[in-house]
Length: 100
Image (spheres, rainbow, N blue to C red):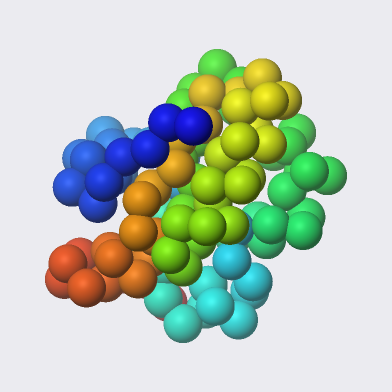
């Protein structure tokens, strides 16, 4: 599984990266990476048609566990997927901006 850190994720976001937040809607509503799309982990397998197979998909959750599993799933399904290590928690601890 490919993985990037928070600084690399911020750089990717600045370049217009697609970020999928696989947390539950209530978690997402509490704060998420700017522009992140919420597709909960349990729904992602049925919603891959919403993702572009020709673009890298960055996957995030709270700490990196769920997003790691979903990065593996997407990679196995033919997507170029990258896990954001440390998740939204690390993003917030680093003082990065979030949206609600």
